[in-house]
Amino acid sequence: MGEPFTEYREVTAADPLRQGDVLEAVDPGATIWDRHLVVITADCDLAFDKHRGRVTCVPLLAEDDYLSEMQIPKIRDRLVARAIVDLQATMARLGLPKVSTHRLREWVGEEEPAEIVALLKLRDREAEAVRRSLESIRRMDSEALTLNEAVEALVDGQLMGPNPPKRENALGRVMPPLRSNYTQPPGDAFFLGSIAPGQAAGYFAYLRYLKQIWEPCIALGPKRQEVTYRRIARLRDKFTHALVQRFALVFMSIGLPTEYEDVRDLHSEVLEATFS
Image (tube, rainbow, N blue to C red):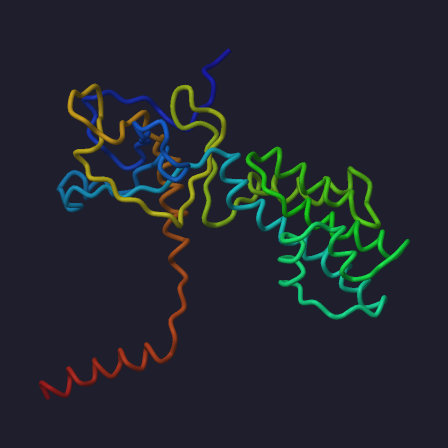
């Protein structure tokens, strides 16, 4: 069998710092935004010291962290909004006071469903329907420490509603949006299966978050002085170029207001008039 596929290659202490180098925080307690970084400073800037010692990087988030931090909230908001619309329709049908979407979501987090039902003075089947809606929203909005917990909360929450779907259908509202991040990643993310030896759990480079590291704080090999990062690998050229290209595209299409263009043109005209 051939060598396993990797997006990185190993480097030695003799190799200079370059674009695509993968850095790992020395501090084991570093946040997910600081734990692993990839250098995007151009090679020419590094070679000719145009960066003035400031190395620009973007974070490499473990896939579970990225999905939990960046994608689960979107799915949760969509599912909770749907449940709240259904609850508002039920409340309107029962002649209850109208409560805004924002306030309903807050209310569910502040009081137990049974207490809310009691305040609304509901009984029997009406009380049961509203209680189940409230419990559904509360469960989906519950705190989750891991991706698995978040997915289970979203699925369980749907199943707790007054008209629950089948489990496979509830799961189908959660998993396809998560999986699409691999097949069709957002424009501000770039997937890498592995970033260094022993680091093959799947990662997303998040391209909207920039971090600058002082170059002397990066160890390229074994060093005695104290550093905050050590280089652990380098992305292969094709992946480095693709990542940096994706980074550029994130900020390329930025529309500016016509007022800005008017002011810009005015300054140009004043300059011309000054020397006419």
